[in-house]
Image (cartoon, rainbow, N blue to C red):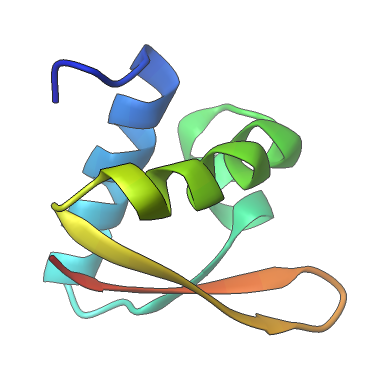
Length: 74
């Protein structure tokens, strides 16, 4: 994880840990609350991380009031 920003590292680590516990669907605001970030900070980075991380697979899944992300092991 050398080419990640600190925020990206924290997001990927959180997603990796959560996926290992069986969670699969996430919203930016929930990730943000857990990490002390804003939902905008998380929401901007998730599409970027979907392209560059191989640790987890991040897929835009649904959109109701906010985007839901499906995350699976990489």
